[in-house]
Image (tube, rainbow, N blue to C red; front, side, top):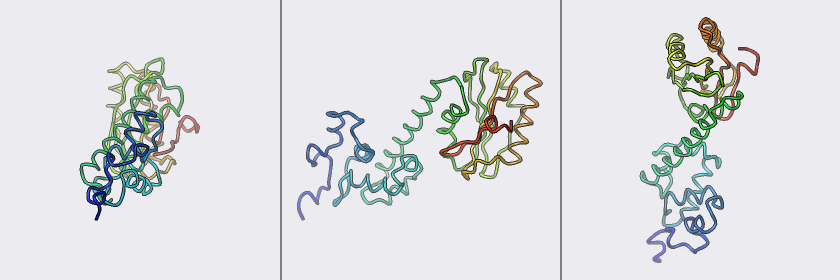
Length: 233
């Protein structure tokens, strides 16, 4: 058995053009493929597979979707030969940083101009969860986000929302309008009767305090349903 097989395919042993780290430094981060970026995270593959080849195999298992890669558990990643807990954690940490960056970018926009902008704000937070969460977005009179509040967290079958807490918080932060948002882990975009009833209950209660309910979004991983856009608010 040759020395290469004994030490595995570490990045340092690759040809210059095949080293993702050097490629990033010489040609910029945009020049790297997803697999090459992941290879930088894991550093080395196994005896018979380079880090890039291993990364390509991991990505292929998720249909080459980074969003699905971020959902894999440490245990699932460790099923790939050449991936141990430390490498798995590195991959998941990078995926989480990417998710948080997207959330920050959405928050920087601040102003809500459409249902699409609400989706961009909330999808990174609740779009990929396996349980249901209900959130309130509080806005000032310029439709700029004052605060976001997780009102409830429940099982896949539904959540319990306290109208009093919602409106008390609105008064505390000086909100003139609110937007409701919750996710459907099942992926369905059809509002349930409970969704409709809760929306109407909050809308009626808010009106008495001169607070508008501008919209209610059902968020899934890749799409959303807007009560306002569909004329059911």
